[in-house]
Image (cartoon, rainbow, N blue to C red):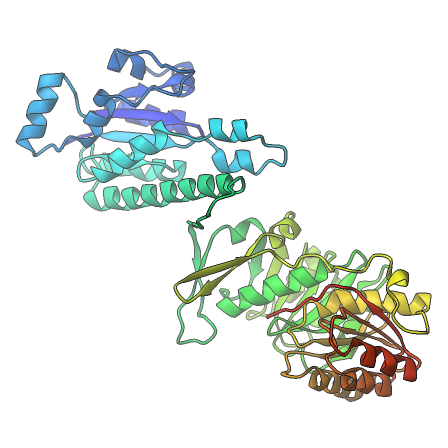
Length: 512
């Protein structure tokens, strides 16, 4: 049966007038409410107000307008059910064949930093989700639309199928509705849970962003959900994999630690070289690359400035999997795009804020939710946190600050040797901290870099003096660590014996 009557009630009016005009041209009667009706009438369309259709005015400052049997009965009645037809005839309830609803902008409202609880509650839509769910439940006969992107396709189907949509389309649109209402309810629950002092629940509903090439390994399927595209724009290269997403997140989190021009090189989410400069990205690149000239092969390069041609020329000579920058100069992009397998990722404005959002990881039977470790802690007033006889020099303090900002991005157990603007040796992910120290020393030796006069950072306490002694013997003259070991005094004594300066931040930065 052709669609005879449509109800339109939307917050986002994008494309609505043209859509309604096409419906009217197809002979569809238009019902509408409030601001939507006004919008359509101003566009020159004939519209019946829902209050006229139901015989009741909008009430309670617009909170009640579509919650009426003539609306929901029109949506839910089964066209092939004799009892439903008798009820509809008895109560004068006509069918509504098409519903177009998008919801009050709750998510956008609560995203505002100064939103009040009252404002948030007033943006909780009641009638909209109710109509969407009624129509979606009865999708065998009712077409339901919650996304303006579907308008064009529906009009095309009406023209191709005698004024009606196909059952396959109605099923697809109904599924889309239930995904949308689930996401909407999850957003409301998440916001209100901030005020809860009783037991909380956690819910999450996100749209599919893309199917990923694979997971950790090619035999593992993986998908990306949410709004990744709001923060990263892929400009070139193959589709992303699960591990690519992890690398991108780790790389951008690291480079946002620094305000100076910075280049970082990562492999399997671990930094293998970080360099900063006052102005020249080429200088920053040289410092990062010299830390480990093998690791960039197939790795990730990230910078916190627009990619210039001069740096692109150098990087293009190395096989790299991903390059990330806030922008790419046109000639730099053109050069890098000649490499078909190289992925170019633009980090968009706002990415720093989203990286500070809670971290969610699966757990047997559920998920774990954790605050992000988005800020290097304990760096204020380091002069007051000295534990050794010798205080650090100004140069050593700057080197400790740099090393501390990097070490929090290295998988634990983590050790980083650095100066004030570059890494010299990195040891990651070992079962004992002294082994991480030895690896960092070995990597520096392999790179031909001297550790004499460097600062060393440990993401967690030195549980024994052996790790610190290994660092001192390699040439480190200053150390920064959280402290908190039962053997702290032994470690302090070892630092004093080696004439090292050492500070305790009081904060650890484990990364698992």
